[in-house]
Image (cartoon, rainbow, N blue to C red):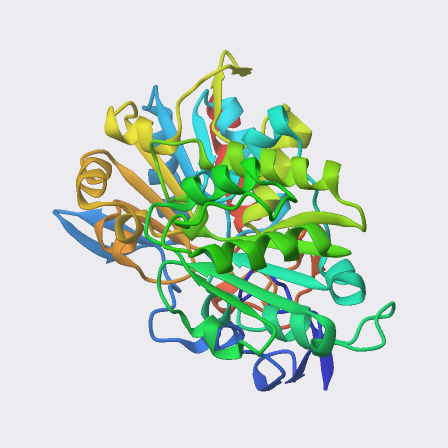
Length: 433
């Protein structure tokens, strides 16, 4: 048995035990269902093992050299290419993708733009107090999950954050208070204890709760008697007491909060609330962790920020980064692209139908390791290895801690890694010019 890191989700658990002979993985111990599914992807029926090219409206198998050349020809004839995905690949592949987008003067965005990327962009104006999973385990006494059903999206997070006994806490679950804020009763509510607080908020009313908390910040004497956002006076008082009295509180931000009210700047006001509480805190501090789903969603933000100075939505012109207010969504809505290169994601399934239809109007190149709705409509499909199992690479955990993923077994059919494939595309384009 040997120890390995699981890339099933953004928690990147590094305590998984594997039994492998270098060719196959025979046994996996310690992984959750999502982690087990990740390792099972090696032999899954939906695994992509051969390049595909669309001929006469039908996807047919092709040699890798031919498929790569066809993809390069589409990119060469493009004047406004679009790159999207990059949350399930290594940081090295993300860097190579940015290099490719710069070389061909394209636009590149990651899945994080519709998730945590918005928080990071807003934090430039308001500031943000982040923490790590180790800090949560060792010091936290208050855990708030706002719009995040982690019991199903990141199954082992509650186990590590809530039930672990920390270095600076002689007890674990006994002294930790759990607060869940969500419009529906999710699976996460199943771990609630007598001291915990379950707040079932009205859909789309997060901004109202945030504003009331800002007004009454650390003051339980002026709470509105009629309540707010479906929460009564007692619920609000208990929440304020916890926010103002915690020594080390952590709020885990989920997609439910990020997408609660599109017309209001929920994230900006939320970050302002956290800053106000920390200014008035008498005992400790309140920190934030972004709950991203894909295992390296945060990695793209770090790579883009370190190389280009912005965390997402990169537009290049004359091989230089230019300022833009566009995102992947607005680019598709305006049909402001003439081809797309999708890396490690499935936008046809994830996006609304009206956006998916616009995506399908233009030539689409997919780089991925499994079949999906996008693979069935793509013009060219280029299969790659599974990072963290069949190739090594760097990834950023959900708390921004870099984790080195290692190669466990050799890939089938001598498939390239995402980084190697993007490098081959770049070299092909460089040679042509």
